[in-house]
View: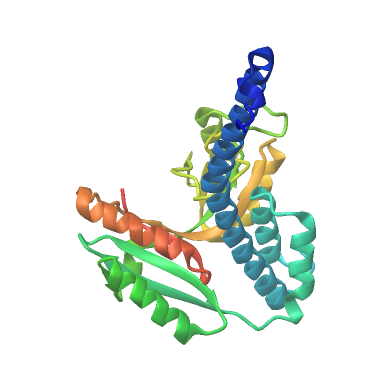
Length: 279
C-alpha cells in the first residue's frame, strides 16, 4: 500500500497551505529572536537596577537609623530619598526601607583608599555589617585588576558638596550651561558642569540629556540646593562627595584594566560610592 501524500504536497491544497506554513515559521523565528534580545539586554539591565536599589535601600535604612525616620527632620535621609526618586525607585520600596531601619543589622561606613597601575587613585565608600569580610573581598578585586590598597590616596581628592539638577527645569524647558552658571553665582556655588557619564544599568534617564552638577562648599550644600529649586530648577540629589584635584590619563592597556576594576567594584553589594581621578 502506497504511503499517503502529505496534504501540503497535494496540488489542490498546496497554494493555500504553503503561505500559511511560511507565516507560522516566520512567526516562530521572530519570537525566538525577540526573546534572545530581551534576555541579552533586559536581563543584565534588571540585574544592575536591582543592585542599585539594594544599595539605596541600605543607605535609607542607615540614614533613618542614625537621624530618625522623618526626612523633614533628617537632612541626610532627605538627600537619600531624593537620590532614590531620581533613580525611579518605587515609593513603596522607599517607605519599606525606612520602616525597616530598626529591624535590620547596623551598618558601618568605611572609606578605602587605593591606587591602580599608572598611578591613578580611587576612593571607595563602603557600607557593611562585616567590615573585615568587605575589606578582604575588595582587596582581592583590587589585586585581580592591578590595584592595591594605598594610604594617602585621599589627598588627591577634595570633599565638596554636589547638587545634581535635572537637564530641564520645572517648566520642562532645557537648562543651558550659560543659564546654570548665572544661577550658580547667585546661589553661592563654586562651579557648575555637566555630568560626565551615566551610572551603568540605569533606566529612565531624561531623554539621554546630561544632568548638571553644581559644586559648592559642604557647609552650604543645603542652602545652594534650596536656592536652585527656588530659581525654577529641579534638584535630583544633594550629597557630599570626593572630587579629584587632578586627572590622570592612562594608555589603552592600563585603561582597560582600570575599567574592568571599576566594573567589578560597582557590582560589589557593599560598595555604595566610587570616586576616581581617571581622565
